[in-house]
Length: 190
Image (cartoon, rainbow, N blue to C red; front, side):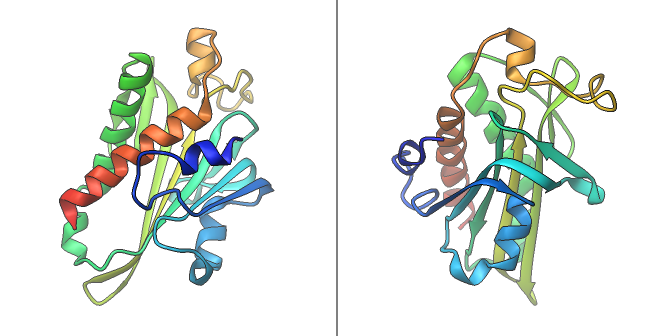
């Protein structure tokens, strides 16, 4: 993982503070358990997640060559500003892949992206609030980029860019485009 490439994305603050783990239980868990030490816009990335978090308490398995990351935001905004935020993140990921590779992903409400009717990306958005004031937002993104083998239990429902096109993709390029799009989305809401 080329950390410097991500830190040089065209963003003002998202991704400038980046923490890379070769292996971790979950980027989302790490973000929440050590939130005080992370800055607004920090990103936690791992090559391998052993207990990645999906929706409804499901496990999101991540092997090397995919994207497992959590973006930590500490905006000073009212909770109402986050209406439809997870869907907007999905739209921005869809746009990133279209702009980079001219590949059309579909959004499966509220937080999955599909390619050829199979799940390729999941988004887990969690917030902490004090009354109606947002304290932190944790945006977990799991994206199957260069995965070529899926377990028997998910082989019929999951896919990757590599599996669908037989080409390798640059994870750093994808992350840069996602965080650039996300920062623009946040500017509309703050």
